[in-house]
Image 1 (cartoon, one colour):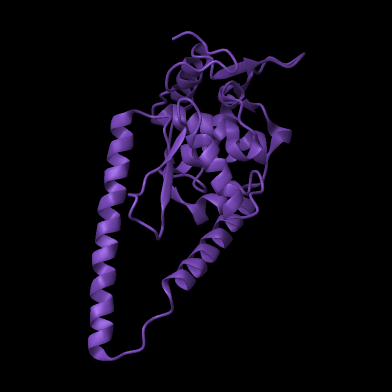
Image 2 (cartoon, rainbow, N blue to C red):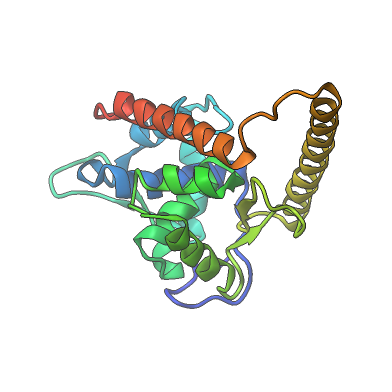
Amino acid sequence: MSPIREGEMSEPIILDAQEQRIVGVLIEKSLATPQYYPLTLNQVVTGCNQKSNRDPVVSWMEDEVEDVLRLLAGRGFATQVHAAGSRVGKWRQELTKQLQLDGRSMAVVAEFLLRGPQTLGELRARASRMKEIPDLAALDEVLQGLSQQDPPLAARFSAEGVRRGVRWGHLLQEPQQVALLQQAESTEAADESAASSQTTRTSSASGTIPAPTVARLEQLEQAVRSLQDRVQELERRAPI
């Protein structure tokens, strides 16, 4: 495949699982720790294998990561650079430059590549560690921009009828994989709906006072997840 020139898009970009993780790491580090970017091969491997802010957690060897980096370079999505007087090459990603993405869009794409589909609350909190996204309205603007690219880079993965816990994901992967993820979201939503209905019937039959509202529970759960992410990020901030 010939490298894509900046601003030139003719067909969807498809990345496999390893390419997604590596590009995600390079985007993340360029935003979160720019003082250590570009990255050495060892830093890329460490970023791929770190346990925080990753789903799934992997354990890749240096040689396989280097092979993928060279494949990405051949596609124009990564570049190895050499500083004057240094024999150690460092890697940077070129994908977001080609796609002409701004900082917030880069952060959201990085989160998708590192963790897959996420709820709006999760996505805003996690992407904000790289580039601040002040509220859900700002996030919606980013997502709409990504979904309106040609070809689209992101889409709503939850079914249209779902209103709670809506998830979005990226389209930089095989259409079959996107379909599987969307099907999984639909199945999970149906299971949650059935469980919620059963809980409501049980509560009404027993005459007990209903639990706190779903919206309030979601806020509390998201606050806990956000705090956990921030703690993990602080623990990880030591230079790699």
